[in-house]
Amino acid sequence: MKVVQPINTGGSYNNIQTVYQLSRFSGLGDNLTGTATSIAQKLGPIIDAALTKNIPSLGVWVRVWGPCVYQTDKDCSGKGRVSNVADNVMYVVHNAQANCYVVGVAGTNGNTDTKHNWYDTDCLDNNVSTLVPFPSGITPTNSTSSNSSNAGNVSLGAAMGTTNLLNMQDPAAGRSLQSFLKVVQSSSATLIFAGHSLGGSLSPTLARWLFTGFGDLAPWGAVYVLPTAAPSTGDQSFADGFSKVFPPTSIAGVSPYGYWNQVIWNQYDVVPHGWTNLMNVLPDNAQNDVVWDYVKDKSIQTLYGPLQGFDANLTYDTINSKYQLLPTPNPYVRLPSQMFTPSPLPPQPSNFMDFLNIVGNQHISAYDAYFGVPATVAQAKVSLMSPGPDAKERPADLRNTA
Image (cartoon, rainbow, N blue to C red):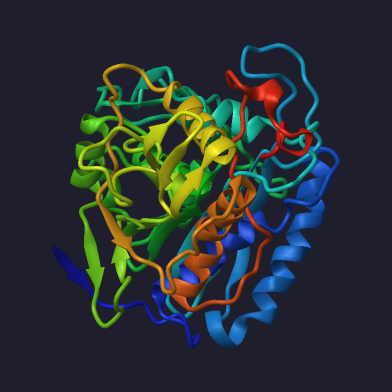
């Protein structure tokens, strides 16, 4: 594996802590509502305040592009439907000391208003039944791919999300991210794409679309990707193509998580098990499956320990409903990755609601603890509940849980 030296951005945090925190700031607008323009206007000062507050740990970073907000006005089939939250967010910051740019891509919006916050879950996160060719299946109007030859396939949800990011234009300069990067590119500059959860799947897809070959990297001193807690985006050919352009790289002296161009994931986090190993992957264990050994009306084994009776049925229903979204055979392959085991281990659930709460904690809090940084953003939305064969039998407070 290639080894590189750390980047000195002037703060007390190491490179991974710094970039992870910067990527998480993209989710600071989850609770904002209104139009895309109004949300972006409010979010900019919020991000700036976070950057200023965290100068001792992060160093001095200045927002230079965005934040840009995408907000849908239609459902996944194209029919009109209202959203009043930030469905996708992206921004760029610059550290002059290291001449380093970080592109932060937001994850699934954690706003609890499911009436208006549905797009990320329905149209991006869970839109995996159909795959499209990469990069030709992604055709934004505000950006242009430098390569038309395909290198694998990605989920339709990932393609839609990446298209949204590529179409974003900075409100101040009216430039897309692609146009902005061409203006600031330099052989002395480092560029890093980062995101958590949905952002962890979109950031490498975005980087790969913008940099389709080694020649595209030449204008930069270095280009890296830091995806965390990411579900799998594409097939084996896509993963192979990504690794050729962005080979797995380690950072000298940053241990145990000092890696670029690899998904850093918690084996007890449900999200990175999608879409390669939700269930039915042998051998049955926590690294391979979320649930196994299901006996209807009796018991099930989960990542966090066994559940009995009705709670076992609810748990199986939630995971199996996601598993049924996958094509057969399952084409999804995880990008090169580094798995970690959290400490302490998650507790054993006593019921289905415990299971859901542990899922949420392992998707966010466990990463904050692993990287040794304070929480900066509310829990991201982990949508597991969906209509299933026993949905009408569920307790009322579980029928619409996300």
